[in-house]
Length: 59
Image 1: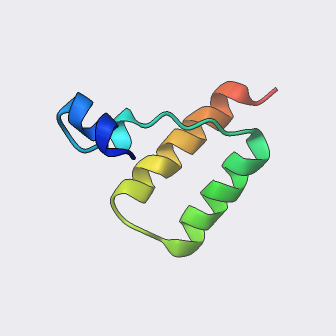
Image 2: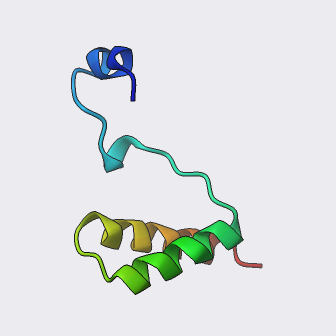
């Protein structure tokens, strides 16, 4: 993130103001990675977002 963006927003960017664009294969890879790592915290949020994405975009 550039200094300009940080100053404009007045706060450091965090996961709540980042928009992630994924295709289904990337989403599955990301979900698999998150499961393998078993990471707590923000990765759990990412996993939830990925699941939500897959639900909405599955045919």
